Structures are given as structure tokens and as C-alpha cells.
Length: 245
Figure 1 (tube, rainbow, N blue to C red):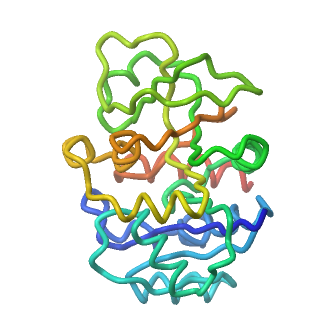
Figure 2 (cartoon, helix red, strand yellow):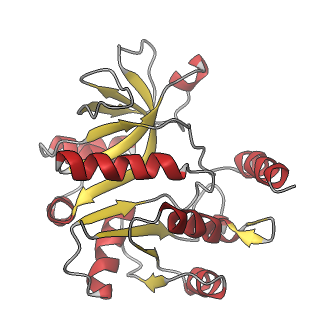
């Protein structure tokens, strides 16, 4: 199946302004993610952004990027805009990677892609096991509950996505914000209005569930960590600098 990998990115993140261009080992975060996406080797890779500085950085480091509209409310809207501007109308699957997760696991993304091809579901995502109980209380860590237990071969439907949980039900996992959609599902998704749940929780995947678009969940072996704060940037920088020694 023809797959396109798109990484939405923008400079105006409120908690850590200029985040995509912060450097680790001499390379920006967004260019680290681009290089990881190339390693996955499932299709062409583009960064979609409203900022010329991000375009310049990605291209300087050998990547492909496309300038999108500045008015998008979500990363998914930005992705659809990028596909239209690129004229990639023959694409069947779209993989959406987070631009602030340079530690994403290549094998986990490949596995999600394989599951999408095997099952032909509309919409897929990744989640990992929760080892630390403190995760349940942290608003910045998104949780997903699933119909059945996640394992290496299962691909169950998501029941809900939540930010905070006092008493986690069975089959609750750490949601990783990586998505894969059938192109037709993506088209439908962006035509829908933002739902109240989505706006309240700041989770765009709730727009899908609120409109009866099923999301299936694949088990990630590694719990990837995004960069939202200065503290998280320092932590990931240390890990990556240590690995490169």
C-alpha cells in the first residue's frame, strides 16, 4: 500500500517556544525525528509546518518539508493540507509522527503499519504498558483504554482517551501520539467539527470516537517520551548524548 509519512511541526508551542529547532548532538529535534522516520522505510517522509525556519532547517539537513496554512487547529488538519499541497492524491495510508519525539522506536512504527495493512482498519495508533503508577495522575501523559488486552498480535479498539485517571480500569495503557489512517478516513476526519470532548481534553482523537470512527491500538514495546517542557528536553538530551558516545 502506498504510504506517506508526515510530521506536523510548529514553533509556537506554548510550553516550550521554539522547541522543534532546539539542538541535541548538533541537530534540531525536528531533523532527528525526520531521520528516524526515514529509517522506518515505509514511504516518503515530509515535515508539514507553518514556519519557514523549520522548512529551512529540515532542508539544510537533507529532509523534505512543505509550508502549510497558519490557521490549523490540529496537527491532523495540517497533515491533510500538506497532502493536498503535495498533490499526493494516490496515497492510501498516512502515518502521522510527532515532531517532538526523537526517541520513537522504528520497530513500533513498522508494526503499526503492518497491522494497518493486515486488518484494513480505518485508524490506528500506539500504546505501551504503564509501569509507573504516577502516570495515571499526570495530565500531560495521555491514557487509552481498550476493549481487549494489548499484546504483540492483538489490535483492539480504543474505548476512550483520558488525561487523568484515579481508578484505572482494566486494559489501560500509555497512549503514544502516533497515528496511521486510511486516506479516506483522514479526509472524513478533517471535515468534522471539533467535538466538545476534544476541545475540553485537548485530544483530537476524541473527535474520531465521538463521530463513530473506530481507532485500533497496537502495542508499542517502548514508551516514547515527548518533549513539552524544559525539564523533558534536558532529560531526552542527556539520553541521546549518552547513546551517541
